[in-house]
Length: 318
Image 1: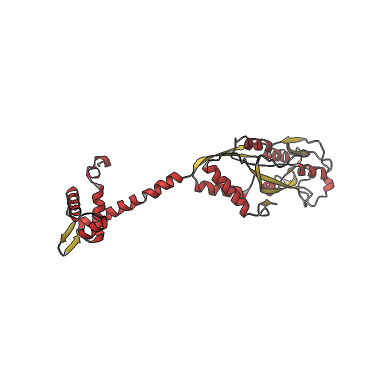
Image 2: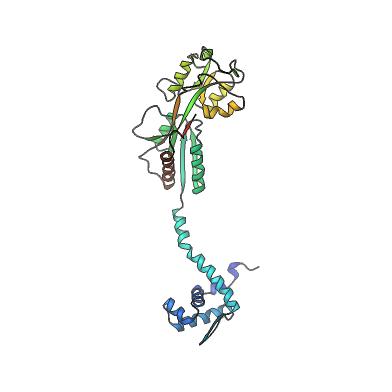
């Protein structure tokens, strides 16, 4: 089988002849084709003769009152139309290639950010812009904020206990915390417990669970339950706090929507109080002084549109 570069016709053929032939067929004559192309009739006739010599077949039957396209001419005309349509798409294809969004987006998140809204947005964004790459770093909220301030991350998803004038922050979603125990704890499986049953129990929590911290409402929840003030276990990582709760090291607070699956599987048990649970906001944070790439700008814009179009109530996971 001959390779494309071994075939002489594509290299020997003047492609303008194909365009001329296509116009002659569509205009049903040399005179009208010459008017359409702004050329003289002898130029058109000469072009047709050269094309027939190149392909080795008669393409048109023409006379003073007769014009017809031969079978070979019909085949060539169909191919000419395909070539013309392909060439016509080149400007659009080039423009699309030049406007194709690419680049890298770095995201810094605090431990175990679970947001179905953000996940769905990220999925749609990746489908629309397949050339974009990502890196996601998990860190304490304070470190997430530092990374965004220092331009080491495009966006941050984290907790905040006070506004930061150097950053732009909006609530991404709101989650509610409740207390849980593991399957071997004495309170596991007991329904309708009074809050007094928790008094004096060991507890585990997050490093940010300190007075004035971003999880201060969780601190207040532990105090309300009269758990031992000295934490028996501590971690900056939500899965590790969960691990300590399941292992029976102590009672601990977790976001209700994150703990739900473990409750359904019998790994965690929700404890009182059951109402008026503390709400914690997770923020979407950017640095307004950062010079963003088109990909970064697009993602930040899409997240902003999500927050504009979806009420905080709908972005609250109870």
